[in-house]
Image (tube, rainbow, N blue to C red):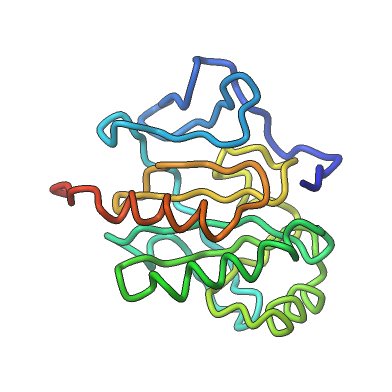
Length: 189
């Protein structure tokens, strides 16, 4: 795990788990855990929309592009050794699940744009990533901005079902994604 020596926003201590402030998800890591799950689904809160320029195309991409789909958000940097190590696992789980209503969205942090593009091309990453040099998009997630990589699995209503504050394996992520895909579809207003 890479620890970035700056923090764009702090975590509150408003409870033992994720809490809602104004109906929006606010992350809290209970007891310093690195794998946190949020169940039952009815207890989850939506996260704020995140969007920004795609690393490769410079077109705006964000959660709203994936309405009604399970979304895996991965925060990464080309400078991060564990991020390089998990890239193949993420791509494997993405390829296995993209036809099942699952999308992936990366958030690239603290890279110059060319280094981020090179990472995507060299590792044949097929899913989009937001270019977020300064961490402004990342701050909207309310997860620790100092932990890279971070992976968040959102349910179809874009509520966090699981947060991984560490590098992730294909087996670990695949099982979590399948569990969230199998959840009953809720009625959206």
